[in-house]
Image (cartoon, rainbow, N blue to C red; front, side, top):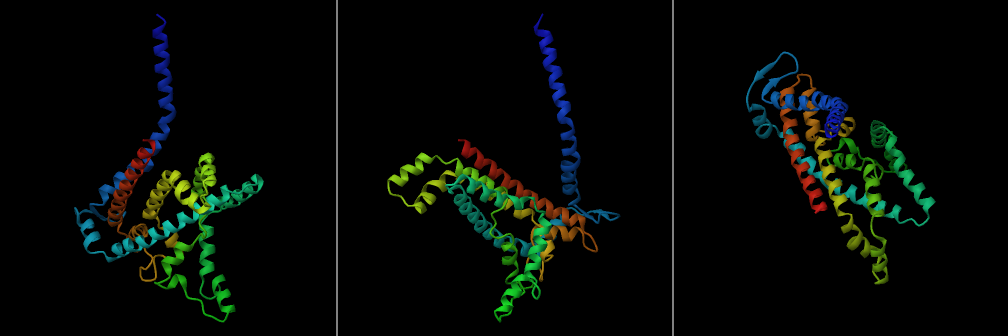
Length: 298
């Protein structure tokens, strides 16, 4: 007789639990899954967001892959940013190891705080500051170079330099969540292994590359995959700094999607096709990320 009330109580508690998480599911459905489904459907239409809404089948995808040199130019630019991603990640690893290796705890906490504080600064402020630094005549770099009697190149207006200049934004790339994750990873390394290597006569460089890096490799792989996904979706940095110029030299797939959707004659359906392609690539990378986690757990 006592089991029935317990069963009813458990059922009632589970209903309450579902009621608490129901708003989250509603928001996910309305603001995530519905837009995703709409983007997939509209990618088969010639759609301008208002009156034009004509079904054209796979024409958007055909134009994207066979008649859109800007898209392929953006994919080529993406390869340059991938190289920059490796450089940025390596700098974050080195700095995180340096901070974790500071012996005095108070100094370590101070340095760590200095690297974390910039996280609260709005990203748009940082981008506008760097845009001012790159200004060809009144920018900081131009003033310094001109004081030496030389002429500074127009970094954001030169097709040769523009992508390197955009990648360089945020140098030395150490502030943010990646730094905290790597710092925590180095803190989790077993010190007894390091001490044994030091007793054996291994140098600090040898310990870093042969012991510490392999031990934090799962975190590095996850950060790398998420960095690649972030690049696939990146558009705001290039939009603010160059708007994809000069002559599409700094356009990325995400920016190309944005420009297609919000130009004078909007092509929302075509932008949806680009978003579907980016979604498929991002989904593949997400599956790779999950596999890496499974390997870590194994």
